[in-house]
Amino acid sequence: MVADRLQRTPFFQIDYASLVRYGLRTPALYRSERLLGLCDELFGDTTFRELRTPLVVSTVDVETASPLWWGLTGLPDASIADAVYASCAMPGLLPPGRVSNRLCMDGGVLDPLALGAVAPLADLVIAGVLDSGSSPPPGRALGGAPSLWWHAQSMVMRDLSRHTIEQWDGPPLVVIQLDLRKVHSLRGGNPRQVIRAGYEGACKVLCQSEALATKPGGVRPLLDS
Image (tube, rainbow, N blue to C red; front, side, top):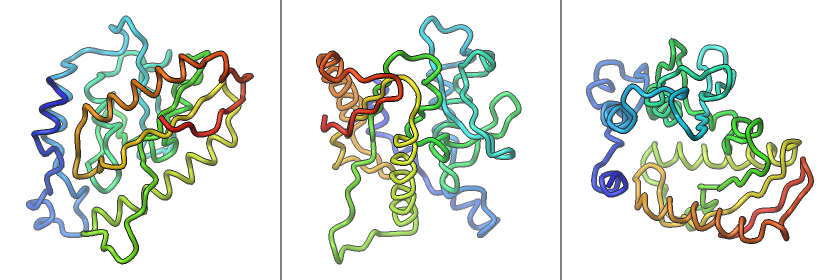
């Protein structure tokens, strides 16, 4: 199972060779080979046009700073493997990825919940917040520079998500706060826990769909999963 491999295999490996060669000019802290290999293994040469079930992957064009939502009507022929890797390429941590000749990075830079990507396709949007929102206990060090970077990035993403939700004018939206306090985005964790939390949270919302019904542009507050 892919989830088991993700738990056993460290995908975030520091690119020491690049650090030695380029110093502060290195394009990213971590190497990309393992994640690129996994994306190629899972998706091969499949494009979005070949899928039966719609899939949208959120990225940002590095050069134009504009969102690119691969899989929507205007971008159907892109490689899924390339788009998925690029959507994981957090700036400074993983090198950007090239998708259909566009240099792209993680879409969470502009839209952490990827709401803009799914709004054109959905009658109801269920968004799962993966960040636990927790802070390190007082007096405890954050560790090295990557942990400090991620802590700062998490604060920015939480604030950006809050702003996006406040300005939401798309289909009815329900936002779930997933219980992932023991999962660290950089060190990894149990992928099954992340998948199960999202699945169970979505099922809970769907079971309460009538009680949670909102009008278009309406937002239900964060719900604990």
